[in-house]
Amino acid sequence: VFSHARPRSPMRREYVARHEEDRIALGLLGAKPLWLGLLDAPCRSPFYNSFQRIVLETAPGDGEFVQVVRTRIARLVEELSPDAIYLPLGVGTHIDHRLVFAACSPLTANRQCYFYEDQPYALVRFSVQMRFREIGAAPFSRASGASRKPGFLKSFRAAAYVRRYLPPGQERRDCETQLCQKLSARPKPTIRLQSEIEAAHASDQRRILSALYAYRSQVCTFFGGRKCFKAACEAHARWLGLKCWRAERLWKFTGTENTKSNNFFANCNP
Image (cartoon, rainbow, N blue to C red; front, side, top):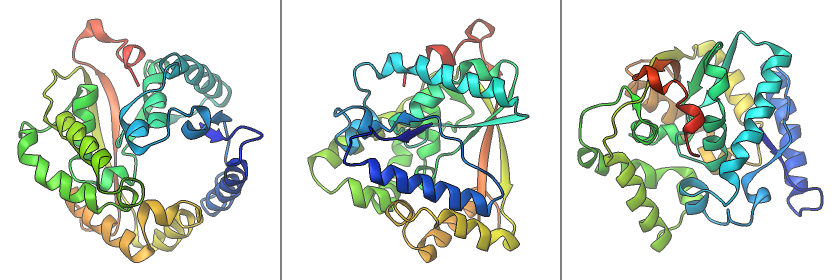
């Protein structure tokens, strides 16, 4: 969705390289890329100049930008008429993922929609539950956020993308404080989501890893080396209750808790 930099931006070459990575990775999976051409957050606004702003704040004007995203995606869905649509749940709360999530309201009415747990953010313990609390989704555990805080902070600080983009200091302390507040929130559930877990077959391991590591400009920053990534995948699969090398959990939209709230996503702020 957010696939480009400004034409004269010094970051333009980086996004051209990413497009080539898309072609290689998706080619390995028998798929092809389709870019919507919207500007990635750091290219869209100088507001997004820090980890904290990208994951916890929204630039002036980006709230209204939801309608632009909604129109682009709706147009694409009408053109392709897909059997199912997979959208980011917004785990990790990267602004671009939040914008797509907030823009998806027209799709849930008459399409089969699934929300995927954004990785590597979903590999951080309790980050999915944190996102559920933020969006008011059921189900989530009744366990208190305070009891989850130590596990979350340990996993968060060990994540490759956190070590790379959020060094120890005041910004990290501020981010951790805000994230733990989200984890401790106890909103009344507004939407219903039903989980489906897909286990990756051992025979697909080489193809999946080859596709993932085709993204040379980003993969090590976000996932670490292959050995580290495989260990994280295995740990996450065990966390989901499976004995396999990799598993992904999807969430199917099944409706709202209040029949009067069937336009929840349209009112969801990024």
